[in-house]
Length: 401
Image (cartoon, rainbow, N blue to C red; front, top):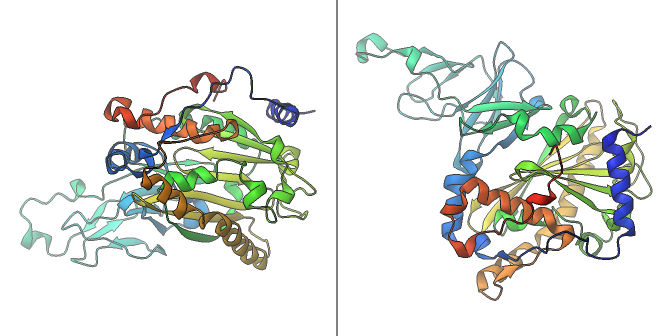
């Protein structure tokens, strides 16, 4: 017997397969102003009012598996240490010594019982407490170590995924990802491990790159030999949720994995994940297509107004063959290359002034939905009128999302 989530997907996918016209009652999507991809003022608004207020994916618990292990988050001009304390607790702190501001660690990952500044040897515990200051009595008149611990960053977990938020007043992560949690069903995301990381430079604004991965419209053209044979694009079902999130469901062809062969995996999830690709766009910048054998957890980050980076963290099962994951990494690069070479021309077109706006189709509704959420996060009143998104999709949000 199907649960409510599975029944919803099976019924919705079947309806999409039989759809022959634009859905009745679904609003036409206005053009997205190209200035949102090019305008320095809009980029500055994102960097000041949007990124610092939203939950940012920063890694998986398997990357800090043992007490004393740490990793760095270095996107958006930040340097944040994520540690697993000797008590087993995962915490995050700005990678800034409270003396003169030196970075405490430089390696992307490591292990230490304490964090010692390489400049003047101020020493901190993995819980952020300042433990030792050389020559404290001789050189500091009123230093209170209890007030000089590392500056904490809000850090919470969702199914083994580590998230950071620079805004202490942000909604709790559990509320923010309520829809995503529900859509993951019984998939044991927290029991997976990181198998590798692929990082690719994008010659465009981060949203132009992200847009590409939020629709299936291009797959039959761009990925005709790599992905298209394993997915029925006509079945692509989009469900919108609160906070800019969504769910995609696409019927698979020929195998229970989009990688073209059946494989035995531990902790096998429900049949829904075997015969459908369930993909979860997670606001602001993450996308994952859940597959039983493993998958890439993809995120896009700005490195400038017209440059960005895609980070694909490969997640699999502990005892899988490492050669398989070497092949998976190469497959990620191959598929991404089919997309990435197109991006500079998109950015040139947006910069040229030839286009006033970018048109979104019904199957591209998530592209428009997350743009709406960006404006809500920034504050519509802060955005120049010619760069604003018309808020038209709220009525399409699923109940409970």
